[in-house]
Image (cartoon, rainbow, N blue to C red):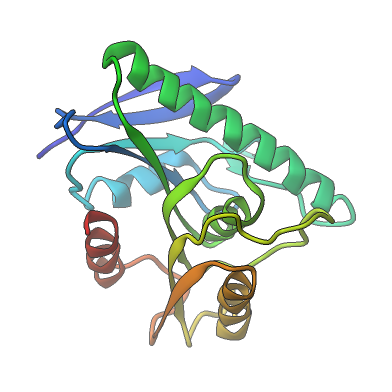
Length: 218
């Protein structure tokens, strides 16, 4: 079913919303798609539109860190990374709350559940939020993701989240051992990751989208 997309501004940042008709007798998934570093939400929209998920409200936010030339990131590298990651967590929680409010204002008593996915730094964003975010999550997917430096606080999971982690042995940007380590760390913290090592490079391809569709739809 095709979605209707619109661009608006939440929390002083651009967000792209994708919405179709919903079966309100079932939970509506709020699927947040995090773009890669120095990228844009439009880049994630191209891939997200091909997922064709049922009963799903799509949300593609713009990262809060200005990378220049109209591109954005989720946090800054360097000595302030932990602090910047913490700012990302607050920013993302606010955006997710606004998405929930948006649906509840239109559909009274709608039951929602949050799902996250992302590519590269966006995959890292999904994993970081699963570790430290305030909203409970239903499912999380990371493509070519990793873990940055995270704030110093307890990260044991209150609720185990199913995580699909796809990474490539030919990735020359995020080496496979970093992606694998990140997913193993998620398991150590009480989550339930499924690791998919593929021959791919640093990319989000059609085979990935098929796996993502199956993962989120079932």
